[in-house]
Structure formats: C-alpha cells, structure tokens
Image (cartoon, rainbow, N blue to C red; front, side, top):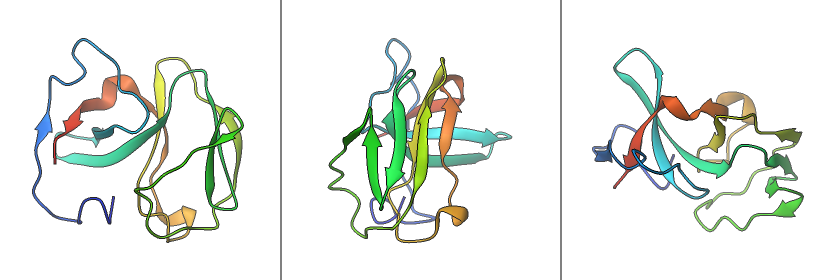
Amino acid sequence: MEPTYADGSFGFCWQQAYLFKNPKPGDVVAIRFAGKRVVLLKRVVALSGERVGFRNGHLFVNDKMVREPYVVFPSNWHLDTKIVKPGKVYVVGDNRSMPMETHSFGQVNVKRIVGGVLW
C-alpha cells in the first residue's frame, strides 16, 4: 500500500467499521488472507456486480476511468474487464509502479474484511 502506508508500519484498524454497512470504493480495508496473523491492507475499488479492469495503467469501473489521486507512481497494468461476484469486493494496493505479477489483488469475500484502516 505504499506510498499511502509504509511496509511494516504501525496502524489502527477499526473492527466494527463494517458491522452495519459494507465497504465502499475508496475505503482502505484490512483483509485476513491466511491464519490469524496475515492481514493485508488494500483499497476497495469495485463492488459486487460492477465491471472492473485496467487499461494502460488506469483503473476502469463500469467502463469509466476512475481518478485515483492516491496512486503516485503510474503503471502500465492491463487486465481485461471482470465482473465482481456477489458477496465480494475488488481490492488493489496503491503501489502500482511494480509489475502486476508481484501484487496480491482481486476479488475478496467481504467476510474476510476484518475492519477499516484508521491510519
């Protein structure tokens, strides 16, 4: 999530952030990927039923380019459009300067989100 959050830095997660509501695009969330200690920070970019993809490094949701001021270093990512499945959100980190193959991103079950990141 660099440059928004430095790797290994200390932050706070509000576990009740999504107790009564679902995350929305732009939210930074903590996601439990495996076990109790592996938690990644990612930004929600698309919701269930939306079409998401990357063209020439730009994020497109429902065929409209999304302005992402938090992405400091542009990329040349390309990913064909996919529809986000029910009960899932599409997440990606803010550091897009590296090749897609080095990143963990994509559709995540909403139940894996353990909270919203405060800072």
